[in-house]
Structure formats: C-alpha cells, structure tokens
Amino acid sequence: MSTSRRVAALGAATLLACTASCGGGSSAEPAPKAAPATSPRLVEAPAGTVTHVAPKPQGIVYDPGTRTLSVAVHDPDRLLVLDPETLAVEHAVPLPGKARHVKLGRPGGPVLVPDETSDRLYEVAPATGRATSVGVGAHPHDAVETAGGAVVVGNEFGHELSVVRGGRVVGTVPGFARPGGLVTDGDVLAALDDKTFSLTTYALPSLTRTARVHGGVGTTHAAATTGHREVVVDTAAGRVRVFDLDPLREVGSTEVGGVPYGIATDRRTATVWVTLTAENRLVGLDVSGARPRVVATYPTVRQPDTVAVAPGAHTLWVTGTRGDEVERITR
Image (spheres, rainbow, N blue to C red):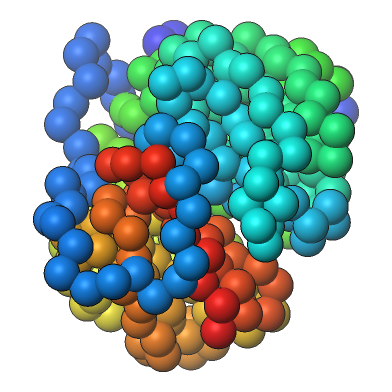
C-alpha cells in the first residue's frame, strides 16, 4: 500500500499525510496467527445457566443503556439481540457474512459488527434491531468508537484502518501487517497488529502515531481499563499483559495458561475477564495494580471464545462457540 495514502482527521476536514513512519509491512497472503485452542470435552459442569441460542455464537457484548445482550451467530449469519436474563431473542438482524467480534460503540448503542465476508461495517441499534452498513476494507476484524463519535475499523487483510463518520469512510490509516484488536481511551487509540504482535498508539482526533512497542509473543485481543491502561491477551504466551498508554509501555503481566483468547472489561471494579479456551474456563483478574491478580475462576461451556460483562461484574456471559450455547454466570 502506498505511503502517500492520506489520513482523515476525525474532528476536521484537514487531511494528514501518512509517511513511511507509519511502519509495518504487508504481505500478499495472510500469515499464521495466534488463535484459540480447540477446546476439549467438558470435565466439569459450567458454573452458570446454559441456554441453547443459535449455532456457533462468537462475539458478544452487553449494553447497559438498553439492557440487552448482542451476540453474533452463524449458519445462518445473524446478530441476535437477546434479553440478558432469559436469553430470549428480541431482534434478529441478518448479516451477509461472518462476524466474529462485536463491540458496543457507547451505552445505548450502536453495536459495531464488522462483517468479514462482505467487507462491511454494520451498526445495529440494540433497542430496535435497525441496522445500517458501510463498505470498509478487506476482512474487517474489529471496530471501536472514539469519544468524538467516529468509528475506527481494523481491516485484517487490507493492512489498514478505516475511519467512518456519518455513514461513510472519511479516511484510512496504513502501516499495518494485519490489524487486530482496537481500543480507545480518551484521546488515545491503541491498535494491535496480529502479525507483528506490536501495539501502536495514535493521538485523537488527528490520528498521529505516537508510539509503538512489542505487544507480546502472540497477541489477539485487548480491552481498556482504569488508569489510562490497556490489557492485552497474549494468547501464544498464555499471559495477560498490562500497558500504560501514555507513555506507552508494558507495566506488568500474569501467566494464566489455558490459551487465553476472549476478553471483557469492567472499569467499575477494575477487573477483566478472560476465557481460557484450552481449559473451558473463565478467569477474572484485578487490574487495579500494575500486575494482574486472579480473583475468580469459573468452568464454562465448551469452546469459550468470547465473553461479555455487565457493569459491576455481577453478571457475565460466555459463548460456547463449538455448539449453540450461551452461558450466563451470576456472582
């Protein structure tokens, strides 16, 4: 991709030229990456209530604004908006292709749904199920809304980020081998690269790159937490890592084993919840200090690829991606 591509500022019409300092390369073929384990058969009953929802649920998020739970499912591809207690379907939104990760833009919605097959970003109102979409780059993997209202999408095979505002793409950010998990915290955007395993920060709204560090051995997902910090799941290393965002640096890590993969954060309790796909377990970690500290573990459904948490961390939901189940855990 040419480094003469330009980056649209989120808050203004001014365009910023992106130079070779954007870093990173691209390749014609996707390279191997860190991935969840193929979970073994259950040896312990799940801790929560298990409900059969729809085939292959993967990608789940709770919205405290509408008190709804949204989950991406497959065969057929849809986003289901569920009652968070009964897990009854309130809205079913058809999708043209596969979505693996969903995020809440802000309380009340929209739910951000990158459709990897159709190369489109869907924004779904959880209260009504109404959906709008816009074409982005190749194989959109993750999306996040900024404080200024723009949505940034990581295009995994397009080697770039797309910036969406008002239902259209207003700019791109090149410089990635394979963009992965995205996080915003105030005036900072942080982006993982699933091929180089780097972590890069950008100032908002200008999207000027501010720092890049090594993120881990085989990183996959991330979440923002308290204290202007980000928590990164290092799937290949079996660790959970904590980074200060300004200045960008790793401040601590904890080994959790079990091929960690999915992550959800609760800022109210300064905890993160990480799925262990090789063990069919969910682990809760206190991240109020530099080093994550395990505070809870629960047995889960098989293939717990993704997790959601309600504010206060009294209720959690885990997807059983191998089957058709969602587990609801109350604490």
